[in-house]
Length: 125
Image (cartoon, rainbow, N blue to C red; front, side, top):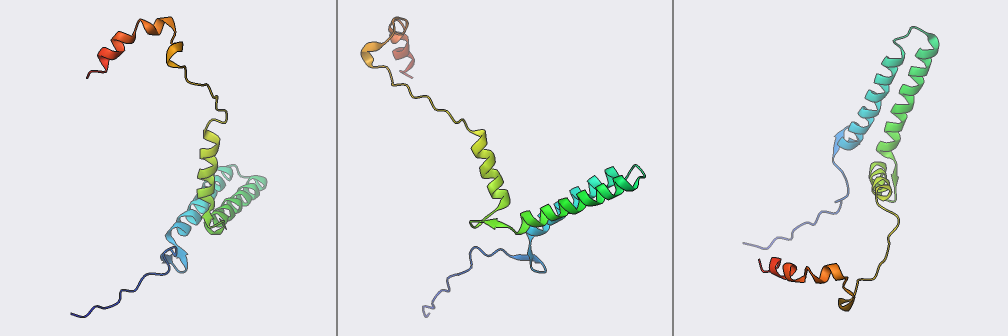
């Protein structure tokens, strides 16, 4: 049996094509934008008025374009939904950290001195 060289894949960051030249992620995001836009359009055109029909059509186009932008735009090799998650995690964490030195062993308060025996008993298990 001869040792055959193994070919190392070079395009690890390339996503598989799903529909024409679009990836599955891009198709889902564009479809979501079209679907949400259509739902807004249908809700606004319930009232028979040219103004509401034009507003619904405008919002449908806006949602569709937003889906296209989110599907295709990348910032620093990350997709926009990844940046949205980074932003959400950043804003969900606390901003202020309070530093307090740990109490030294000699500075134990009186109420803790009485509980030293019970703490030692609980740590046996």
